[in-house]
Amino acid sequence: SDEVYLEAGVQNITSGPLCLEKVDLEPSPYFTVTPMNHLHHEPKALVFGRMNVVNPHDTRQYLYCLKPRPEARNNPSALRQATSIGKLDIVWRTNMGDRGRLQTSQLQRMAPQYGDVRVNVEKIPNLVRLEEQFDVGISVANICERTLELHIEFLSGGGGSEWSGVSSHRLPSIQPGESTYLTAHIVPLQTGLQTIAGIRLTDTFLKRTYNYENLAQVFVTNERSGEKEAFYSSWVNHGA
Image (tube, rainbow, N blue to C red; front, side):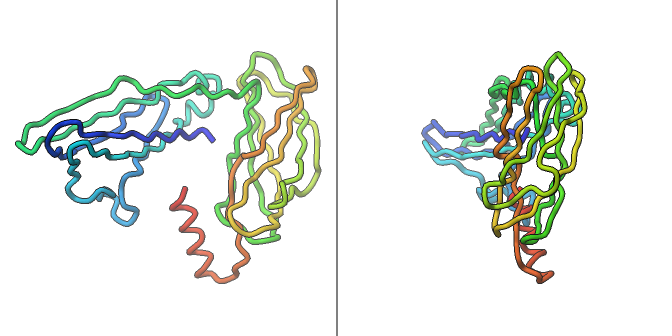
């Protein structure tokens, strides 16, 4: 996944309580940000309560999810070089009403190591039924400077699911900076949250192999009740 999760700890190192008025993450041009510090049923309410007061030496933990913008997502080479994710903007007031503000410098992430090839799940359902085949949309991107000739194999899913259909075939030639899209079929064999795994790509020119063991996750249920399916689907969407 291209998502980046940032956890920021804000500690009060003064001798008196502080009221945190704002702790925002301003993303870099490559990303959009979703704060994960609000109540699900009341988006404007923080999980810390109405008055976000931090006592001396206490710490507040903030969580943010960053996703690449479409223009960055469609350019794997640029995304790999995008190490700046944004900066924090913190505003507070003391117990005497004095206001303070702090802006960090640009926060950095470790550059992802894709190698020459990048595989991403573009389309997958949140909820599927046990032993009923479903489709997964997969993109294979060339992020090196030469044309790639690749052979793809669908390996055993590890017990929780199995690939269905042709087990291996040759992909079309992929030019530098471009990608190809394919649809794979999976049959889930166990209930619960299952990991989609078991893809191997072979560079037929260099004889180099790339294994992908944790591509995505899907929730598998054997329930037929519409009410229960709606509950599971909302639970998965909330967790995502």
